[in-house]
View (tube, helix red, strand yellow):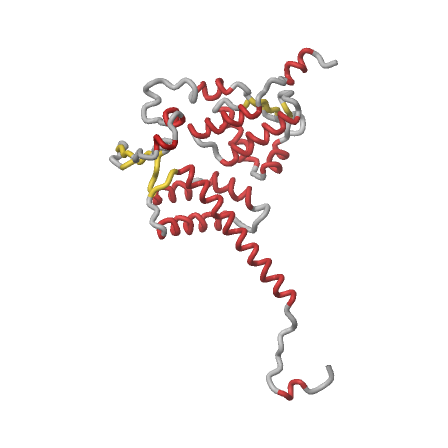
Length: 269
């Protein structure tokens, strides 16, 4: 029969779907990196598989292999998740001690309740809570509105989420400078496709060149990152499928005919 301590650690009352819902609400407030998302849901799966007996020990090398990122990316991601109050962990010390992780199962304690206890001044300009209560028909007629930042640049907020829209030039620079995000994409795609860091940057440039050709001048950063990931994955898949198709065609081809005159056919076959 399990002890009182183990029964308490099991915590059968955890609502995994509630945690997932709150995670994405937190992501709406400040977007998580690809690695942070992968690490959180990896831990969520591990905790649930162990019936919420926490902490759960897990070596960093195993985490790296599971979510396909580098060791430094895992260390950065877990520090950021802890700073935002979603997890706690104890560091390992080589072979003697394995890192141990726990999830904070009360979303009210995440980031000191930033998404739940905003003051009036902090909610100025944030429309998430308002638009949640509006039906589609009520918001159809609403238009975008512009404000100025301290550099007197236009900042456009959409009426369906309040996220800032940036110019494609600004977005291209942000994505090109975000090497951590690029490393995460590389880690996720390199296992399936042949790609390197240089090709990621070249595809970012090509992606924004296409946006300009399509007449796109502003996008939301989070939506743009998501669009690029799906776009590059499609490009790589089409490239890989095309290579495989050419290889299959080559296998079915016979030997090239090198004879140029009737005399070339003389002799035994």
